[in-house]
Image (cartoon, rainbow, N blue to C red; front, side, top):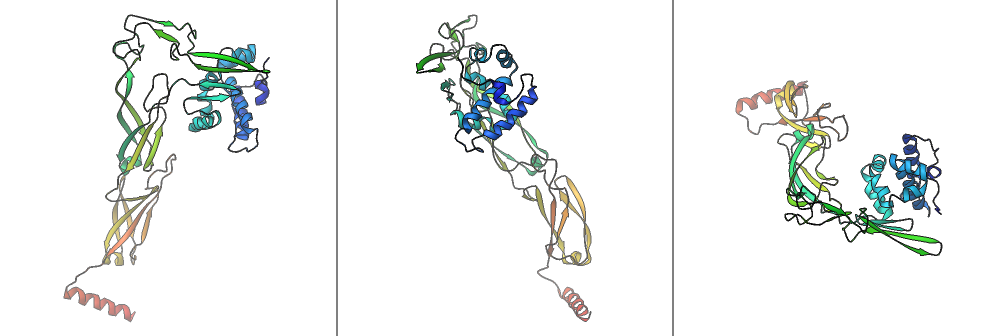
Length: 367
């Protein structure tokens, strides 16, 4: 007899609750019992319990089985690994890209398996290596964003067998040991408890199918070495640094793909210096222009802009061009461009120029 609590009771919702109501209630409970926020000794167990309930009730097919047959209907068809892996998109919708780290910490993941409620689950495959891609972009790319097109080395579908692993014209048979599930369950009793271990089937290596005549080109793997084309968007406002794209690294047969790590370096610009979303530009002006004032045209990343240099402007005066900087990453707002006036003092002057300056100096003293 199952000792699990009713999933609707666990989440505190009615049986006719909508998907949005279930999602909202789970989010509240998950944040309440998350071990990083709740330090009570039973927080992790509560978190696992509400997460399992949500994994079932947020999936239309699993919820129908549960409503019809209770826990036995779900447990008889799905392993705990299937329940959580099949609902990954639902968890990512709530927790974002942190889904994997949250559940690896609680269920001992890392791509090899996890332990939950007295059950041991193997994921049947190793994780592929991460791939690293280096690229340089300009400030103009930071302003507008950029579509990057690259070719990645790795495994691709075998051209001969089209990924089946079997010799063309032949078929595969269902594994008689695991009946096509790719997993084998073993049970052992201890007192009043029954412990179930789910492991990849050794006969079919977790595939559920057995190839009678392996493809000669790929040796039955369905894969061959090659390159695959991949494109991704470098967003506007991005800073230099490392960025991770999940699942785009090395792939492994019956395993978990690694990640693509994109290392972005923003190249120095010939005119502008960057500080976050703000840009800085030095405009050289003469001593006369600083004294008398002048209208100037200065460059921006999008063209030019007119500015007014007021009469009597001092060296290092800053003029702000609002909204002419870079976008803030993930936002529609933009930084500003700051124009610094660099007043050029002549190093050499002739006698006539010196006489004029001395006369000006005498007049200024008289005033």
